[in-house]
Length: 337
Image 1: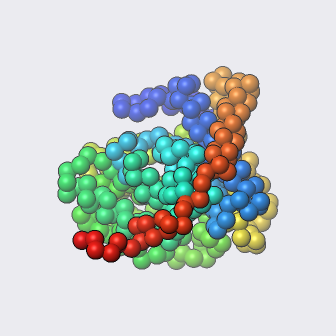
Image 2: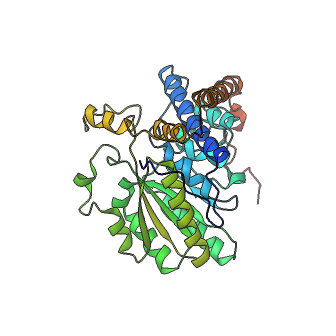
Image 3: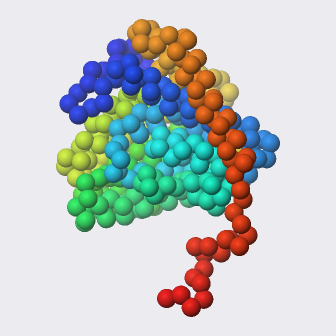
């Protein structure tokens, strides 16, 4: 990470003033503490099914989500807890959903991989690798045809770029000049295979550029870089109504999922990446610049932990969906038109 001062505000950009910097740091702490607690609850079998943690990658959501606007659409993967939280989905609703409770954001029917909130234009949580890409194209096309001023930001991992859905989506987005921001979170290993072992062309920006779209490679461990790049790319999408591709080079500190024995990478490599952890690096940078004290950091962390514990209490107390409602939205009532 660069030791340069935080960038000054540009026209239309959110200024990296002290209050904003602390808010972004607080957001990354909220993601980290929520996910650490989720891992504990999974071990206690309070959360069941699949659980894919974002720990280590918080700078991408922390920076990128701040560059989006309320009318924009957001499509994410099954590692979407942080994106949903920073999009404004209440932590109570996220935790209840992971518990499978009726007060969850998807009424307990989706679980960890299918967070959804239409009111905040957060369209998943997609369990299928690359599955969100065609959906994002559809949302962007609908907005363009209806002349609705918004962009669609689609987050996906580098593993999705080996899928046909990626190429079809990139082709249509470029062909139809759609307001679509492709956000690739490259954590180097997809599910458990190194990039060089799964991609004949490991230069992801070169792949995207073959469709004639603008691309940029971003340090995904630096929340300032993530925000600045997303802000610039989003401006291009809005002003020119064209797709743009961002590759966030990041790293997950935990295994692919809670079932993953993680035999495909060295522990020394993980430890080396942890030295560039987004929360540690950004908080150290703020302290060095005199924008943050240790006491303020502790207070932000305490606030995040308190929110998490409140969400756990909410999830524990939330009801299960009544058996009588299990057919709701699944079948059409007899006699209905």
